[in-house]
Length: 223
Image 1 (cartoon, rainbow, N blue to C red):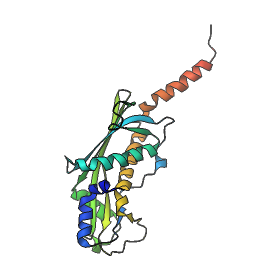
Image 2 (image 1 turned 30 degrees about the vertical axis):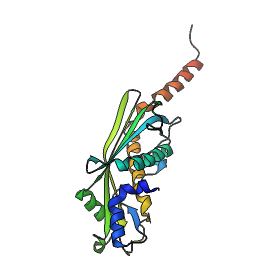
Image 3 (image 1 turned 30 degrees about the horizontal axis):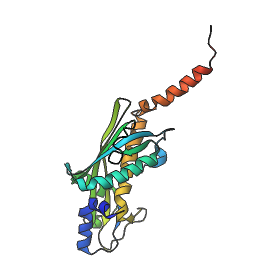
């Protein structure tokens, strides 16, 4: 991650610097099940969509977070095999097949923090020694003249401050990986839920029509 990516996590890293913590560790909130790339059904031909993003802090646009958010979202969407994102900044003349928009809000949400602390498996004496960054995401996909979206997708990650033992069974990783891992979970959950609810079923109309046409061409017709 380059220095611009670290700008998103200012509150975490400033706190860590003040505490003098040399090797901060992070882990994802445990109140939500883990979603894998395998849980999202790939398309035979990923949709080429213009990617736009907006990073927010408590509902207000924080433009320094847009670039790292775009970088992470583009890579995650590419890896899903559902969408092949087009950067609207570097390819303004390439309209693709539609748009995908990701809005991520870094919020001070006491309910999320409380839920994460209660579901994290951490002993009570650790509460207050872990910094929680809570986020809420919305994503919308527009193509073939239709739009499907998901809102209110919440997640959080925690960063350990100081020399604290984390219980076994909780996966930890360097703090500069926390944001990307959390965003991946949010995007995968949104796409999986869209597919399960048939919210993306109309995106496969073109592929289905091709198969039907191929079948009809092979069926003998009565004269």
